[in-house]
Image 1: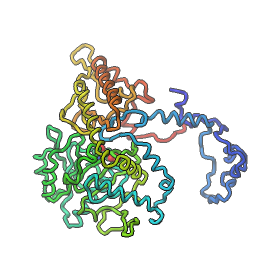
Image 2 (image 1 turned 60 degrees about the vertical axis):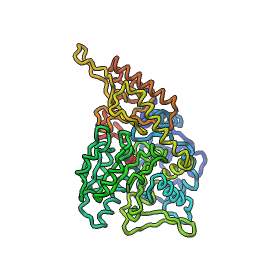
Image 3 (image 1 turned 135 degrees about the horizontal axis):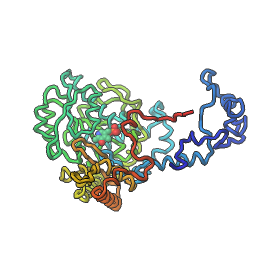
Image 4 (image 1 turned 180 degrees about the vertical axis):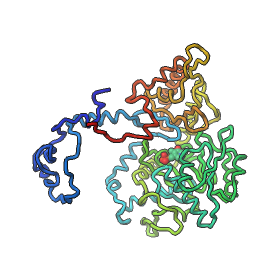
Length: 516
Ligand SMILES: *Cc1c(COP(=O)(O)O)cnc(C)c1O
């Protein structure tokens, strides 16, 4: 443990301060902020020295908060070092399958930081936020053009949030037509875990359709599931194996014929942007993850934006509020609609994220946006072909933006010999990658394979970065064959090594616990 790995509370020394408030009128009691708290200097409270701070007596603290007392350099080092303990797309290659961790261009941040946007309040009258409303309006048009949909809601703040919204629209459509029997939704066994979860949260029953040996939805398995109780099907295309569902035309016709709707999980739209449109494939409802395909940052659960688009006949069911363009060319917000499905967030969604994605789309333009999917696809196939002799490739066909290995070809296990050792697993490969400065790919997902390693390079990586990654992956495979113990004890130089992930998820300790 390095000396600066301590918690900031452990660095605290009574009376040490990090700043001087000088002769500011707010610091009338002296230059030491600690003076304002009883027990830590003068017997005065902040409220007494801040002019006009009329905080009711019952809301005032009885004693000073137990804040750490540290110097400025303690604070600077503490937080700078903390930031270095994390891994981000700005620090290294992040080939996280199904998550599209692409570079977030800094122009997005500059646009989002423009004062006129940053200082907006959601309750401002429409006439005072015309620019922001125009962004919503133009994004609606841009996303509709990219996806082949008729209109979008920006209500949802994440992909799963979008799925729930989309399914609520699906339900609303059936219910308002008096078609009450449609309570089931079909989900492929390759689906992202959020799909069945969202369906369940929406009160729909999940029916699983199997994949065939090529990793695609098995049409023969689908047919008998279709009937008057089916609300719709949720599909991801390319699916979570990175494969294009070639039978989508037939699947769409079958589902529509039985009265159901098609939902497109567009979280991973990256390979298709500007190339193919879900609307043209027959999908009725979709969500996009602006925080994946459209280059806005994500990780650790937020921030995000999962706008939902629908085809023409479902437009009345889109949740409100909605931005409209009036005849005089100005923009307004429509707050109610008779058939609309319920709202899943306040106001118009996560504006800062939408703005970043808008900057990204405008920066690329109609021509360059088509290159995104091509380069993402090229990068994924390049890695796949370069590593398939050391990692098992269960589905060998050309992939789109991502692909899945099923563990090592030679995991180093010496079954039947005297020094029987357990072979290296996918988890061990992932842990060992950290030692070389790469983020691990997605592992143990999708659930179709026991040792899944799901790799997605994205279009933003150079061939040199891809080569460096390939070299390290080959080195790790050689280590596994030689001496899997190296992998099993990895990572050797990360801030933490192998936490108990189940306990960390089930009983997280999220705040400082003072042992004293
Ligand atoms: C990431 C992802 C989701 C969920 O998106 P969140 O923003 O994390 O809720 C859904 N489906 C697929 C295929 C995804 O990759």
